[in-house]
Image 1 (cartoon, helix red, strand yellow):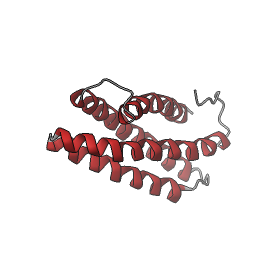
Image 2 (cartoon, helix red, strand yellow):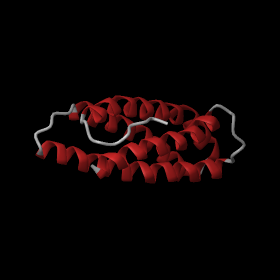
Image 3 (spheres, helix red, strand yellow):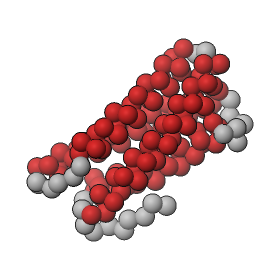
Length: 137
């Protein structure tokens, strides 16, 4: 199924994107506030597209009467959205002190929540038994 393969590919891209945010929050990056803000906007846009693909997959699975823990995954998406909203509000404020603080706190939590969410999803996807190689690289 192409959609499932695309979602797994998304996870790999998201992991790479999150490394930049994580490094910045840990003081291991020389990116300016403006540069990291642009990266976060890029991650957010990609995440939104990814969520749409996941919703489409879940709809397809539901139509085929395939059981997945949708409520658990949906709750995780809502939890992640709270951090996105906080970060987005800080970026809109254009207050560099606020942005820095929010990214250091909520940015770290966002990374943690997204990684955990993907870790929870991937075994579900593996169990769907579609014919494609699965790797978290």
